[in-house]
Image 1 (tube, one colour):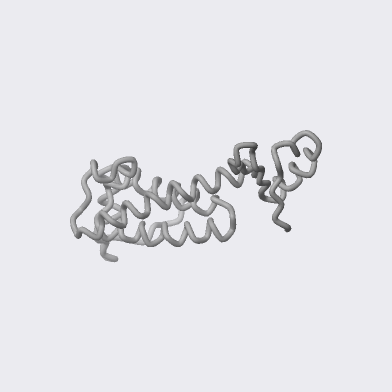
Image 2: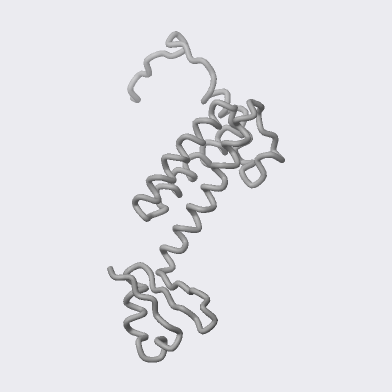
Length: 152
């Protein structure tokens, strides 16, 4: 695709060309005061906003974990839902978030990122319940289990 910078006056007589350029990814318009404006599909804007939001969260959490102390709820801020995880789990979250961000950017689709966050949030909710936490994280011995008989 060629790089075209439209002028504000083009909005009157090149509207179709500008919209087509935007549909294909980006239309740049130079305003009368030399301000550069960009038009792009809303889906792409939302994807870029999600990647930016989670990239910032990734950097903040990575920085907190480099201090080798378990982050407080205040440190986590809007990521306080991660408070149920220990430091090793948080490091795994940061590593997986990094991979999800790369995939989302590469695919130009935030769905992989959305699915990753959804899965971790579900796990966090399960770990908040003490009984579920003990089942999920407790030790299990094969002797504790017995074969079930088929229903009669």
